Amino acid sequence: MTAWRRSRFFVGDVTVVAVVVVLILTFALAGAGRGSDDPASAAVGTATVTVDPRATGTTVPAGFVGLSLEYPAVSAYAGNDPASLNPVFVQLVRNLAPGQAPVLRIGGNSADRTWWPVAGVSRPPGVTFDLNHQWLAVTRALAQRLAAHLILGVNLEQDSPQLAAAEARALIDGVGRPSVRALELGNEPDLYPAFPWYRSAGHAVFGRSRNYDESEYIHDFDGLSGALPPVPLAGPSLSGRQWTQGLGQFLAAEPHLGLVTLHRYPLQICLTPRTSARYPTVARLLSPATSTGLADSFAPYVSLAHAHGLSLRVDELNTVSCGADPAVSESFASALWALDTLFGLASVGVSGVNVHTFPGAGYELFRITQSGGRWQAAVAPEYYGLLMFARAAPAGSHLLRVSSAGVSGVSVWATRATNGTVRVVLANEGASARKVAVRVPGTFKTATLARLTAPSASATSGVTLGGQSFGAQTATGVLAGPSQRAPVSGNGGRYAVTLPAT
Image (cartoon, rainbow, N blue to C red):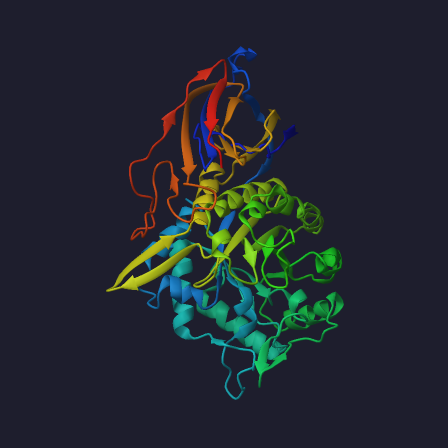
């Protein structure tokens, strides 16, 4: 098998990550010479993976990994004092975009339940969160501290250009225009006819009729966009594939669009029978259909966006939607899923991903608490997968062509950084340990192995990355403990790695 990515593997200085098992190999490229092609160094029964450091594919853009937050989550995570932001949260964001300007998306379900109070106007019945000057000051301080670019949701479901314009002006003036990447109009409008905007006297009240469709949404988007300040707009922020089939019609109709945004959750609890392939289990989360299959489904939409001169960002992504299943979404399997999915999305040309999190979510990336002025965070396994990707695919790196033989059940990805460092990531998704020989033609100074590990795929604690962890609680947002990176000896350009069973 030959691919720009999947074989499931990673190379860098040579860092290997074993995530029950994900291995990251990092090779430091020292010259342009070629290593030996002698196959004798591959042990009998050993799968062979060949990485071509000169066959480059897509580039990983700066700010590729970001977070998506609900509006109330900003204060819950960053605090209420713009002069004293939660340093743990700030560091956890920085970890995912080291040396870069991170992209933060603020919206989700709360986008259509938020407003900026307007004198003489009653609060819309579906609104549950009021923006205020303190929230704006905290968000402005957070954006400035991180040098972040913000995608900010604006309430579309309330169906009021006047209120949307007031909200947009408040956001831009309060947060600061330089920090605003785009305004995203509404959240998952394809679900407006399916889920109520609010309830009254026990009855569901919908923001749109049951027959609401793409053409009506385009009409609503046009009506709102004409009332907003002149900043780039993001959309259509769809949840699924049905309306996405009409993406071309939307792109052709929206001259003010600056960013194409789509959402995706591979698994779903509500309205899903347990026998469905979409019902959450650890095995289904680890299925290729859930990770690389999900990523591949975006390829035609990326091409369509590019044809209109736009980039496509998956600005809301996580494991399980419409309900909580911590046994799946908080398991180590979520870290493996995140790692594979982010590589897959990068390989099809997605410009970035925002992983959704908020207090109380079944897939929350970290639980933040404050006591006596001291902030702490309990970091979930999935975050480790995001962190591994950020280290394995630094900004500006290229995905590399990977050829594999006898590597069924092992995921392999490879990147080459701007400084020539090659990284290979290996993840064993099988029930048996595997021996893999990694062949990287060229001359390399070093090869080191770092492991992403956990007691099992279903474990919800005990995760380590390179021997380090955040522990039960972190007061710094930085991995703690001695770093464990093992040197790997090459034999004729081959590096032997043993991958434990998942």
